[in-house]
Image (cartoon, rainbow, N blue to C red):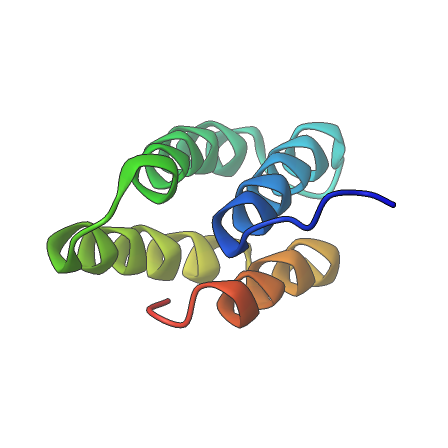
Length: 90
């Protein structure tokens, strides 16, 4: 039986899938791709290492920025929405 994943691991996996979907999407403008990939990297680092309320606040701010930029793309919006299930501070 597979080992249970933590909430942080689940969010990190969703971030990875989001990154891949952004990269292969033909609908997203290149400028948006470049901007969001950088923000995703920062968001991922905070989620992976964050353990205090300041880190959670920064992660939530990065998440809001990503959500605003990527909401028009339903597949990516679904992945971003799923992150809120595993990271309630978002």
